[in-house]
Amino acid sequence: MYKFEVYKDKAGEFRFRFKASNGETMFGSEGYKAKASAIAAIESIKKNSPGAVIDDTTKAADA
Image (cartoon, rainbow, N blue to C red; front, side, top):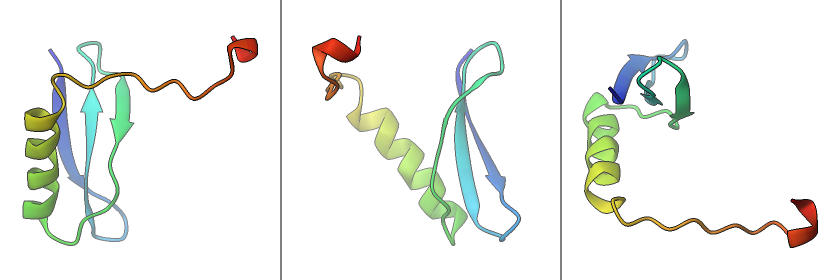
């Protein structure tokens, strides 16, 4: 089961990481002063990304 994990970093800012069902962290966020801002960012990702496309900016020769 995929999940967002909210935590506080060493600087006291709120961050979140997105974890795969195997527990691996797939990506992490920037730091937020307020926990509500981190939660709002998560909600924005959930709401606005279901149709996200892949924008591959690498050259075909890099493959």
